[in-house]
Length: 374
Image (tube, rainbow, N blue to C red; front, side, top):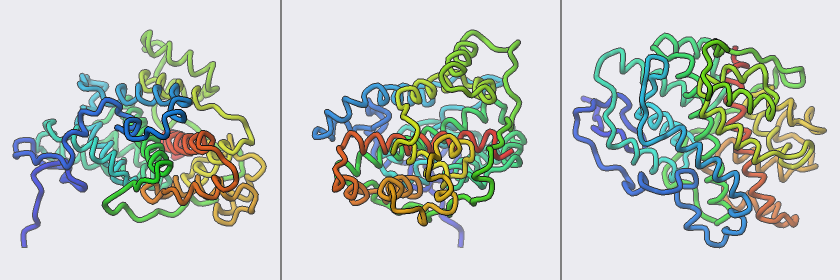
């Protein structure tokens, strides 16, 4: 029997190689494409009870909103070195949203993807989109599946160093966005998903944790002599703010994303040995980033390495929240917040914990794919 094919690319699972000349099917929620806030996707209007909390985090939320316009503008101009189209970016975002299982994100990215012309029907274009989609799904689901060979496979289908950096920033951003949106849903007591998500992957192996992390660029970094004024400005900002001399010239291939990411991190800084640092370490341990884990592991590092679920009772509620939000954001709910609320936590502190966990999911994927996988 011939397999049925959907002519559009806007449904929950879509045909990634659908031909642009086929008649498009209307998206599930067409109005989701035109929402003003492309980060919280309408939650600020729905969450009247959380307005004081969201106002307190307004600098970080605005920085995240700015990043959505940087990574997903209304129009993308491609070149020989920057070949990712807007269709590519939104297709990647929809893949990550599907993996996370957050319906609100799926509605938005599918609605924005719907009217765009897809790639041509050549074998090369199909191979390129298939490889990009597979990479995005693997990095979003289980970062340890990414190896140096994964980066080489992207190169083999025509992606440049700037393309691969942007691809990883897009995956990281939507992974972060999905967990913040899931957290706000939980604070409001709303469900995150209405359709099934994916099977929960295993945590990263313990091998390599507890030793000084090894990180070297998996791609050729930008050379100083080729850097433009915008790239130099982004490098200067990050070298003084983030202390990442070994990576900044690689990430400068996409200087706008680098600068926006650095600004967001600056808005969400937290103290070592704080609950936010512990949540960041939990997310990094599950995702497999030795570098991010080493930065935040604190006093519970050895017990977290042995296994998140076997960690001691100390701070167990913080660990459980960060683990659930990292492993399965589509299953995150108000029930996961209740133990901390019972312990006297205020909504502002809970949202800070959610933000730290979400950002660590982004950072862990970025650092792992572009350096640790090498």
